[in-house]
View 1 (tube, rainbow, N blue to C red):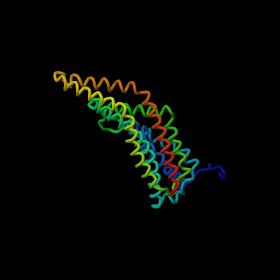
View 2: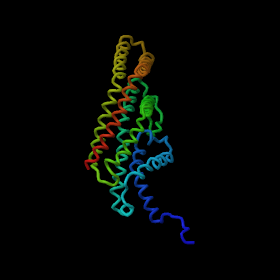
View 3: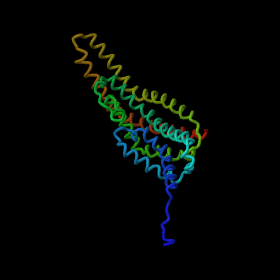
View 4: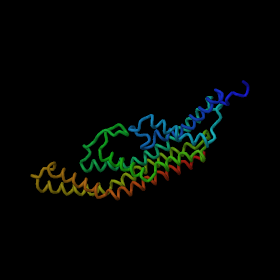
Length: 267
């Protein structure tokens, strides 16, 4: 009967909407792949895919995407690569800065004689000291407790206002931000580990003088337990100060992400 057909979308229109939705997932998906916690190996891949789909829904509904005709041609390849680079760079920026906690934990573990206590890190897949993993988990826990993950996601979603989907951006900004973040990682890592490492250095000097004065005292039976006790005591006593420093690191990471996304408009 005439007039009884339900309104619907044609196949070509449906494919076009699907292309636009997949395109809207690129920046968010790239961020979730490279960001700390979101991109960890212990997060199942289906969970990351569903998170990308859910977070891309408001982007697809509110942000103007390139027309499907343009996305279906080879001219869309530069736009796809640009969206992926923006998302992955945003995630890597946070990962690099958060690596300061892992660097500090690794150096403290080595100095305190805890470097032998290592196991497979589920986030990286390699052997890392347990102290380094504890530092990284501590950093992530503080970041989540202060809703830093929500702030990072908000910055990525709001980046579509500064750098619209498919628009050219200044990719040199991403390289400069990554280089600056790498230098900041080593600087902050040194600041985090310096108090504990300085005390442990003094302890090692005292142990060296004692074992030199009394050779009958075996350095392994006397010095090693002493270094372990002092190292664990320093970690326990310095936990509040360490937590404050890591909170500031999380704030600096979100500020760096905001600055990087804001500078993309120069392209």
